[in-house]
Image (tube, rainbow, N blue to C red; front, side):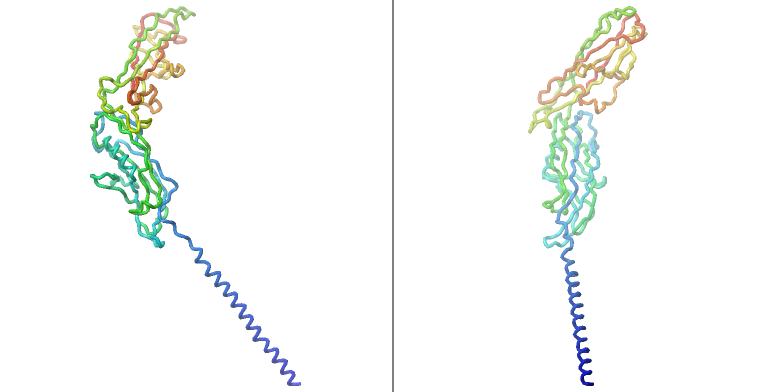
Length: 393
C-alpha cells in the first residue's frame, strides 16, 4: 500500500519539470520574434538627398525695358540708372561624396555661357551689370567670363554647410550703372538667355540646380537732332454765319496732318542698321507719342477736350473747338495747359518708326468748330494756337 502511493506521487511530480520546460521554450520563442521585429528598423532609415540644389522654380530677371538714351544727356560714369525688383528663390542644397559621406560646401551662384553675350552687349552700350545678393549693397557681384579682365565665374551664397543646407532663401537684385556717358549713336540688342545657375558647391556646376534667365531688351543711343516733326501750320475755318435758332455755317470740320520722321540731316551712325539676327527684338524701334498744348487764347473745359474761344476783344464768343482723332473713332483729344511727363499708357499713341529704313509716321486729325450750347454768339474775329509736341521714345 505504501509503495503504490509513493509511485503515484512520483508520477505527479515528474510531470511538473516537463511543464516548466515547455513554458520556458514558449517564452524564448516570443523573445526571438520580438528581436527580429526590432532588427528590421534600420532597413527603413531615410535616404539622403542626392547632391544638387532644388527650388520651386528659377527666376527671369527683367532687364531695363527697351529704351532710348539721348546722347549728351547721360549721367556721369558710376551713376545707377536702373534697378530691378528683388527676386526671391526658396531653395535647399545637398553635397555628398560617392559613398554617401556628407561634404563641407558653400552654395554658389555660377555665371553661365549666355552671361558673356549679355555682358558684352551691355559693355558695348557703356553699361555695367551688377548683382546684389541677399541685400549686400556694399559688395555687389560683377560677373565676368571674358579674358583680359578679372574672371569672376562664381559667387558664394550664404554660409557653408555639411551634407544638407536645409531650407534657405536667395534674394537677387540686378542694377545697371553707367560706364561711358558719351557713346556713339548706335543700337544694342540684348538677347534673352540662361545666365546663372544655383549650384551646391564651388566646382559643382554639373549637379542639378535652378536656373536664372534674363529677358531680351534693346538699348538705343540717339542724337538730340533725330526728331523732325511737321504740322499743317494753319487750319482756317469758314466765316461763321448764324441767327437765332439757326446755326447757318456751324458746325465746321477741317482735317490737318502731323508727320514725324528721322531728321535726314542728323548723323545717326549705325543706329538703324540691320542686326544679326534681324527680327522684331533686334531691329530699330522708336515709339512716338503726341501731346497737344494750348498756347493761344481760349479756356479749356470738358477735362481739356474742348477750347472755349474768344474774340479779339477777349470776350468768349459762344464757339467751342475740339481736335478729333480720326483713327480713334473721332474721339476728342485731350488738350493740355502745359507739357507734362508722358503717361505710360500714352507711349506710342502716335505710332512708331521701325526697321533699317523707317517710314515717316503720319497722323490725321480733325479740327471741329461747334456752338457752345446755351451761349450767345458774339461778333468779331477769333483765333487760338495749339502746339503739337511729338515725343520720340
